Length: 68
Image (cartoon, rainbow, N blue to C red; front, side):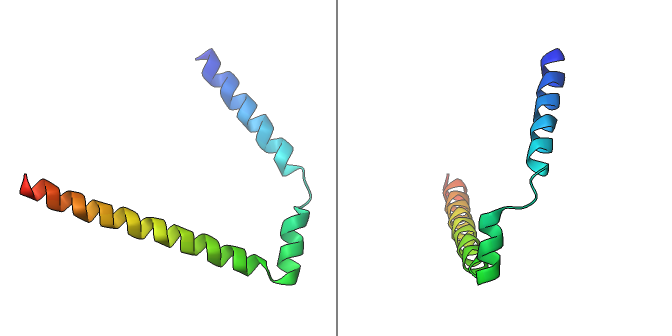
């Protein structure tokens, strides 16, 4: 129990350190130039690809389970 409490306190102190920053200069620069949308589109495409891959694996596993 003591280790659990210490771990929570350490995680919360780390969150406070990151919250003190005023902003991320790289994100602000990308947002001002309009490049942030390219990053978001790439991220969404990668996520969609992973989801489609996982669903296809799930369908194949269901077919194999029905056979056996």
